[in-house]
Amino acid sequence: MGKAEGVQAMFDAIAGRYDLMNRLMTLGQDQRWRRFVVQRAGDPGRGAVLDLACGTGDIAALFCRVAPQARVLAADFSLNMLARARHRFQELPICWQACDANQLPFREQSFEAVTFGYLLRNVDDALHVLREVRRVLVAGGRVVCLDTTPPRKGPLWPFIRFYLQVVVPALGRCIARDKAAYAYLTGSTMDFYEAEVLAALFRQAGFANVGYRRFMFGTIGVHWGEKDPVVGL
Ligand SMILES: C[S@@+](CC[C@H](N)C(=O)[O-])C[C@H]1O[C@@H](n2cnc3c(N)ncnc32)[C@H](O)[C@@H]1O
Image (cartoon, rainbow, N blue to C red; front, side, top):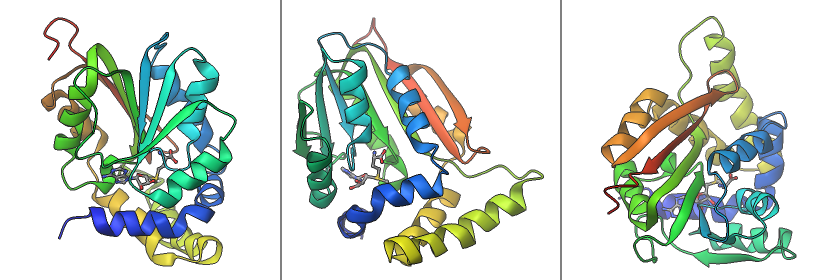
């Protein structure tokens, strides 16, 4: 069985506590990384941008504020996360849509930029999703991805491992009342691609000018790339 069904049920269950958990686990840093994502996506002008796996809507809301002329579309397959996003940002002109990242219901070349926070770790085939994203980008369009990365083994490794393996699931149990969901977060972080390997996957999906930056002691990565402006499709 694939990941999708379990992941969808898990986010439906934790939607109400998701934002509080995020702020606590990241010591309030998570919005800084999302601002960096929006900044790397560049100025879409009056074009359309897609925030995929939008969750409770923070990245889409930042887009609206930074690029008020842009048409902002935000999509997720968890209806409870989407409901929460709609409620939080009802004053913003965001178009919310239920959809699966494996099969985007958009035509080729629809978006100037596509962003996603903490999506790829949750899908069965990240390369397939990246190719889907590339398909819906205009030539020269930008992709920006925020996700956790497995921390490198250095002097801080024992502390980071303790934080991920003990503190995060404990917070999940006490705050979100769902230890399993946050144990999954730790497991999927440890098992996810190293930052350099993920960058190679972006290139394999056909993106050019791929780069990345790490945050939070190397446990968070932001990757970006461009759809080749000459070759286009
Ligand atoms: C950890 S949350 C991140 C939410 C948001 N991007 C943020 O920055 O907080 C991951 C989100 O990805 C969504 N997701 C996971 N797999 C998906 C898929 N195949 N298609 C659409 N959404 C997906 C989940 O429903 C969840 O809302």
